[in-house]
Length: 546
Image: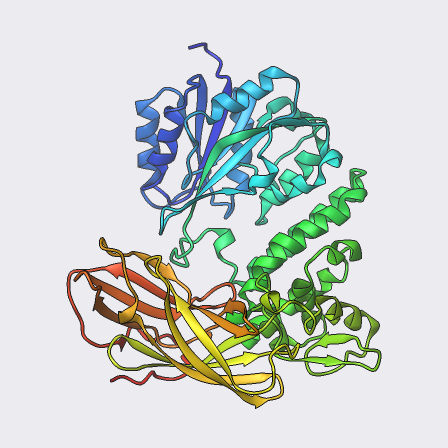
């Protein structure tokens, strides 16, 4: 191996002694071996220093750098490592993640093919709790190509990770490009700057980074991106957006503002909006106070590119209709109708129970193009909400369901509905009657017998969400079955027809639209009756037990 390394990979770490060896091992096992590994420790207080020094002693490619004071973020440890890096190419790795074996080889090869400022590849996301693997922003990195400046493909602003890229050190030094210290979401600003400053960069359609996602990590150990419940997290993200906006102007890239705003609305804001149904009133008020002023500066053209359901949520927040915003947020991305609509004298249809006053609100809450009353029945938008959940006979649930039909697609009178669930690939169906409560509103009760659902011979482990089906004039329409946002989860152990016992848990989904969720897991003991598990704070009511 030559004296000078080809690539320096910086591993930043803070109080992560247990996972640090895995990250470093992924570097030591790279197919391109001539690398420098800098462990940059943000003044850890656990036994990270001992682990890092042991790794340094085991491999002469490893160097240990310890910051004298904790910086509280990712920027300072990366920047300090950049100051001592010896290689002409730089990469970054977090201590809880890994590089796939060929990551360095693939990106270095792209640099050696032609002169570019950085190379980037696919990011593989791994759910720690389930092991499920997906690709981050796969459509952006599906094709190998060299991009001659970000103006040629502004949609790449969605791929804002600094860790999926290999940079030339000369490019970073020439532009004095460093990670902003003292703020969170530093990747977004750093990447926006790199995109704008780069004359050319190459995309490699192969995995170069393995990102471990731990959605249920303890609050103290959760990553910054998993701390959306903190209002400070919202403010940090907004602050970074303003810094990016200022940079776009100062660097002569103001023309990218619409694409950058669309990325913010579709990615950053959308994550918080999806959480709105599960937040309390004080949190939503604080959230609106932090985000609405920035929304007023967003490009109208970017806003117009959003689906109508997302624009409705934004406008309701702007108007201070916070409870309505929660209701609307449960329908984003799923074709879920509002509970009600109102029509003005011109025939325009608006979200909610009152005709908007301002022209802006009229424009954003106008659902006329959704054609709620004229869509084909198979694609019609309804809203199915469970208003109560109780334990019935052993293995059964008694549900009260309310269906909203704001487009008046259903004929006046009672209707037969069906709830379907298929834990083993074979659908189990329970039919029930929906009666008219008021114009456009129907209600009925159904008993869902989970013990009657057929499971495979080998058993079943997984999650299923029941759906509700309506039928009219021999046409069928299926939709989500929204659960109460909070109720005491229920658990039981039931035997399949092949004698395999399964623990079955019924609970609200707790994210996205908040569907009713049923989980199966094979176990070795049999319990006869449904019973509530650990009670959630603020549960609607204690469920009846029998």
